[in-house]
Amino acid sequence: MNPFAYQRAAGPDAAIHSLHALTVHSAKFLGGGTNLVDLMKYGVETPSTLVDINHIGLDQVKAGAGGAVIGALVRNSDLANHPDIVANYPLLSHALLSGASAQLRNRATTGGNLMQRTRCYYFMDTSFPACNKRKPGSGCAALKGFNRIHAILGQSDEGAASAHTCIATNPSDMNVALYALDAKVDVQGPKGKHSIPVRDFHRLPGDHPETDTILAPDELIVGVTLPPAKFARNSWYLKARDRQSYAFALVSVAAGLEMDGGTIKSAGLALGGVAHKPWWPREAEQSLAGKPANEEAFRKAAELALTGARGYEHNTFKIELAKQCVVRALTQAAKGVQA
Amino acid sequence: MTPCTDESIDPTDVEALENDAESGTPEGREMTRRQFLAAGGVLSAGVATGLPGLARAEEEPGNPGSAPSLMPVTLSINKQKRQFTLDTRTTLLDLLRENLDLTGSKKGCDHGQCGACTVLMDGRRVNSCLTLAVAAQGAEITTIEGLGDEKNLSPVQRSFLEHDGFQCGYCTPGQICSATALLEEVKRGELSTVSFETGHTRQPAITDNEIRERMSGNICRCGAYPNIVAAVRALTGRGGAA
Image (tube, one colour):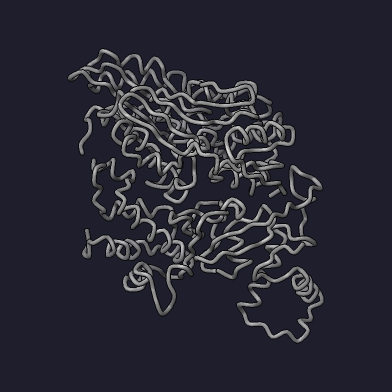
């Protein structure tokens, strides 16, 4: 780990001021540290200063059927177990509790989870010289490497030597639920506050695989806002992985259904583990509105969701797996709350 | 400035030990195996955490030539306040093991993947390997040594003994800290992903599947899982098997 200075910020304004002053020196905010400290140990992240934001407040949840405001420093475990989140946004609780371990969820924050970096082996291991995300312009070792966990949608693929190629995936479970719920990310920078639809918050690799989000380097996530709860009774988070717990998703699906009798009034749908960002299949989601909640509608949505999917040597199985997961998640969501 | 002002070995001792190790002459020092291992640990920790005179910061990526950053830190560990001057890179785990000789917390993977380093931070289980010591200021840290001792075992420690919930024992302190927090989480009615799968999100019944899911952040390479589940099960008010 490289040496770094440490500052503890007293509030959001002070944190942003500190980071703004230090941006040129690659300062970073420290939340739970479950991803950042890990990457610092690997030498992937090398901040000169950590601005500790664990004591700036922003740790409250206000939620009801009409919406939710979640502070950026709310721990994943606290958010997942907040009674008003469980009651109104069970999809979010279900997704959060599908991720990591109890220990990690106790430290990981809402804002930090949004900023979580890929678990691509070639990104995390500095002994591989080629990784456009870690070292822009160096190429992509995953393209012809062991790419079992990699992207099948939205990837940049111009060959292993290209500076644009990146087939990394976003590893978060929480983010997938936030996409299905159409959340907004509230951010604050030196020029003030604004909100970003979460579906626009993360980037596809495009020409800049090194950049995961559109957050400016001196901006701080202050919270997440959820729209009125439509899927409180009918939602499901399905996570397919190599072991049943404490593993990243090969494919995950967040599904919410707003039901009117046996008919779907509206749907929320997002996939994890398949792209550089949580994948929001707009057409698939829209295809469900007005349809009866049956297998035919779900299969059609699954086909639409995977339109254009392309696999590599070790991950082509994900295309069919993702379709099956979409169908099963929607089927489970349609069954409704059992408790 | 000394790197650590509490109980740890001061840097001159470290250098003396390093010289001894280089020359191969321990100068008549009688060392027990544990002292020897502890001293070796301090030496390697010196490199890892950048103690003055031992740091090799110039070899680190990203910040060529930058010097270690030292800070005064006050921590409350097992209800004792302690003051240190620490390299900011020091993890809570390394501080416990290398500076305080609290070697119950184990370093398995050092990346938050195995749970051997689990301690309680304000009563909640966390991976001490991913927690920077400087960031733990103000929190109450409880390690396995703070839960009980040979003469006064905690209920979880006793249950692990009674149910033979270990083989080699390396992951056991982390398992016990984790299970201790699990029981509190259950009392607070907290959920797991299994609670959703079984549809019991109002009042989760702590079945064996719930225990397995809730303990999944602690890996046991010996595979003592059945007895670990039994040890936890006995404390959830379900004496028999599920």
